[in-house]
Structure formats: C-alpha cells, structure tokens
Length: 549
Image (cartoon, rainbow, N blue to C red; front, side, top):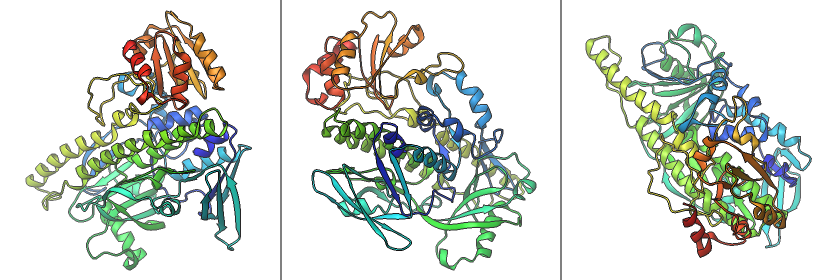
C-alpha cells in the first residue's frame, strides 16, 4: 500500500519481501469501509469488491453450537452486490464512499502488488530479506540477501521503512520494544491458536443453515471461528489449542478431526495448509521512527484479530506516511513533518488494539455450560440465553463505524485544532464532524458520485456556499509552498450543514486540516499543515481556531 502511495507521487521505492510471493493463506479477511475508501481513492476498490466471495454471498456473522447442530445467533450484513446498491442510500454514521467488504488478504495483496508493479517508480522484489542497514544521517544504506542462494545487494536510499511484521528485523535492530498486553489467557481467543486452510465443498451440503461469511462455534468441546474464503468450499478455520495440545504432535488426520468436531458431522476435507499463531496480543511499539528509519503495520502494532483491526490500521499507517514521505523527499515539507506520523498514528494503534482486546474478551471470556447442547428444556433455554449474548456481541464487534471513521489527530502539530466538547470514543457510534483532525464528513453528490471522488489526490480547498470568501490567499500560499491544491466548489446546503464553515482545507489522506470563514492567515496556516510551524506552540493558530467555532 505504501508503494502505491509513493509511486503515484513519482517517488521511487524498492520493496524487499523474503516471502516468495504475495500471501497464499487467507490471513486477514475483513476490509473496513475506510480501507475501501482508500482503495477507491487509488482507483481499484471495485477490483477488490469483485474478489473473494460471490457477489450475492451473505457476509453474515453466525454463531452455532456446532455448524450442523444449532444456530444460536446471526448478525446480518449485506453481500457485495447489496453493498454496492445500499451505500448511496446511507447517511449519518454510515455515510461513506464505500461499505466494508469481506475478502481474504491473499486476494487483496494480489491487487496491491499488480498496481504497485505497474508504477514506473516501484521495484518489487520477492525472495529477498533485509540483512542489515546503516543510517548515516544523510541517507540509509540497506543490505538485502536473496533467500534462495545468499546473493546480496546494497541500496542507497533516503529512508527505510520496516513493514516486516511482528518479528520485525528492522524494529529489533533499532532496539524498539512493544508495550502493552503480551498475551492474555482466556477460554477462547487467548492463547495458541491452530489454523487450517482447507477445502470442504461438502460443508454447504450438510449444514442446514444459510451460509455466512464468519462462522463461530460455541460449545464445551471445540470452540472455533471460520471465515468463508471463496463461498464454494474454501475456509480459514481457527481453533484454540487446549493444554497439552502441540502443533507438532497433531497429525493431519487429527487436525481434520478438530474441524469435524466443530462441524458436528464427519465431513471430508482437504487441508491446504496449517500453522499456529498466538491470540491475546494488544501491543504497540514504543517508537515508530529512529532517524531515517520508520516502521509500520505489524512491526509497530500487534492485534488479536477480533474486529479485523490489524490489517486496516496498517493501511491507514501507509496512507498517513505516504503523502508525508513524498512531501519531504520532494522538498515541499521539512523532515520534521515525518515526526507527525508517530504523533498521529501511535495513539490510534493504542486505541485500536484496546478495542480489539475488548472484543476478544467479550467472546473469549464468555464460556459455554455443559448442558448447552442437550436436547432438553434446559438446553433450549441455555441456547436462547447464549444466542442473546452472542448476537449483541456480533453487533458490537462488526457494526463499528466509530472505530472505522472516528480516529482523530486533534493534538497533531500539523492540525489547526479547535476546542472540542468532550466526546466519548465509542466503537459503535460515529458522529460526523468537520472539526480539524478527523476524516472529512462524507456526502453523496448524486447516486454515483461521492464527495470524495471530487477531492484532489493531494490537497483540496473545499469552498462552500455562499462563497463569502474565494480563498485566493490560500491558492497563492499553496502555490508558493509547492503544494498541489485542488479547488473544489460545492453549492449545497447539506454539505454546508456538515462542514459549518465556507472554507475547508483537506489533506491528501482526506483528513480536515483547517476550516474557517476567511483566508487572512492563509500563508500561516499552510506553514502549519505542511510542518513548517507547530500548531501546538502557535498562539495565532489557537486564536484562529477559537474564531472559527
């Protein structure tokens, strides 16, 4: 994603990845609406929405005792086809250019790679690992080693970005540690998880319930969650290993028996791959940058995958860092702008890992009783009780506009912040606001054109009715600063009602940087939002913020 952001801005970048190709296992399976908006901005949201499950496949989250026995609860979500039709009709919390999409990471990575490789400035190199680097203050010399034969090469670059995962060589070399919860133990979603990527077309023949994207079992024997990968019989199945169970001791026959136990029927299945991972993490790196070396993705935050927040947080990391790196490398902003990447993104990682931890505790610490599966009045009553809890949990974990759209950068030195009334940061509540520091409020201009479609790829000056000020000084100051500024005029009372001021400056990542009713201090504001001045130490900026409320 970062390569796509940089390459489209003409910044040359070399990617080294020690894997032989993009992901072959499903891994992340939930693409949030904000991530889909970024894919739309880059022009390939429809490519991604066409992948994964069939267009009419339900993306429900369903809870069962076992997949063939009792359905306990179901949280219904639209199929890809329904999402396309529904998105233009929504307002309030879910007013968005795109709705979420359920698609495996192995499909998404192929699209990202194809578009990155199509950019002249980008070089993608699989089968290479970073084996050393030296930051001399003026640049970074990176040593890469080919995994197949040990051949080496050196690259001199302006910056090195370590997106090399939870065991990041770059982070460890810098001596940066994770902070937070290093592995909670729970009945489920807290401990070592056993993962199977398998093919079982028979599943849809023997399960008597409607299909779902996410299938969760709740029983005393084999708790599991399983994502449908292609809607035809491929699944990503995860179950927690019990005390005494070790991956290396589990044969494929025993692994298949685990899956069959969750299904509640002796289905036939083909194991495509298997592995283990640790649930219960809520970790964030203590730093995101040392000198000319920066970190992103799992290298700086490690999630338990409840809510699918890790992958989506990583995408936002790349978007935030991409435009800033390009501005600094092109000389349109000082190097100090890069410090705002950590200032803005680290609190969001702490926030999001905290929300994921809450979701994991909600499902993992809720335990089944032994009579839950009994064919008795007691069993029926227990299933009804469990269903009520699990339905509420599913709604809380997967209807999350607050998490999706509500992250804010109010204390960033490149945001002209306004005094805000205290407002709880809740996962399931999002109130659109154009107060600088958050995602620009969204509106559909007609049934096909999103307001976001009219924003520039870089900066946008949004001018709203009644055009009391044309923002001429902003246009001049932006030109003097080398800023690529799109001027967008919208004559709409609805949008004015969302943004409240006639002039709004919107960043390349669609975050509001400033709003106001005149352009008197335009040059000063441009200096702040490009990192030449620090808004936190600038009294004039604070005075302007108070005036515009």
